[in-house]
Image 1 (cartoon, one colour):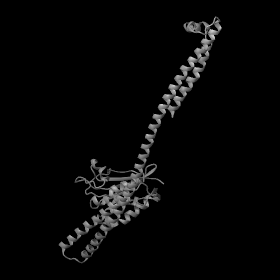
Image 2 (image 1 turned 60 degrees about the vertical axis):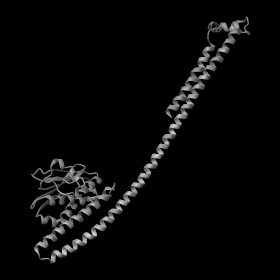
Image 3 (image 1 turned 135 degrees about the vertical axis):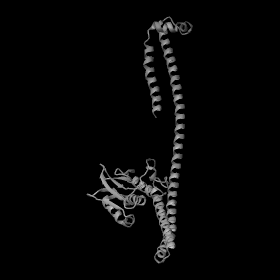
Image 4 (image 1 turned 90 degrees about the vertical axis):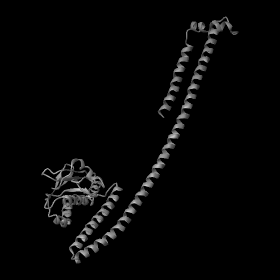
Length: 336
């Protein structure tokens, strides 16, 4: 549109300049006109002895000639403008057509993606149901056999079966949770006290804490209100489970909530083996197996924690425990 207006302005300015120019031509000195058209006068059959008639005739001819030249120039400019407009409209139509085609492709892709996510969720639910049920049955029979079996060797086998089955159930649950979280963009939030959530997590995991004879220290000093989803509980469960699973017997786990300005920073400090610097980011990746001496296994717990924190616009990470050996897993959640 800008180029079109420039072309029209050029034609308009040319016409404005032309008219005054032609008036200037009319006012030229007589001698200049005679000098320019003298040869033409001598050949003209209409020449007379009166100089005024000759000058008037020359003026008229000159004005007509100037008008013809200017008219020709205007016609050329208008023709060029028409060619430009035609090409511009052609390019514009092509661009609009390409944009519409791209929009249709994007809409089709969005519909396919939505359908794919729906199929993925359906498959996840079916997989979870069909795998969890048999695993639950195995778990029930194993517990029953553990109660009635007296042979030491058989008891050891049953315990190994029970541990493996529990690990399988946990892996299925984690995979199902992560798959669903991976397709979620927003979570409904409500005002909750992070201190209360952590206290509930500690109470729910007392059996595992007792098995490791661990001491979990958490001394909340007030309400820690944040706009979060109930899923944040899973973050704290994974942090505490991680500390218990890879820590030693009789270890101490310190949990603290600190004021970080516009957010709360929650830290879980353990006395485990610690994590080498090159693995500190990798521990939050799904199905990432680390070297021996670091965190073992290929669980999804920390990957799930990372995704939940991301959905809360928070941060998380792991550092070395400043009190000695071990690690500090930390995360932040915006204040309410």
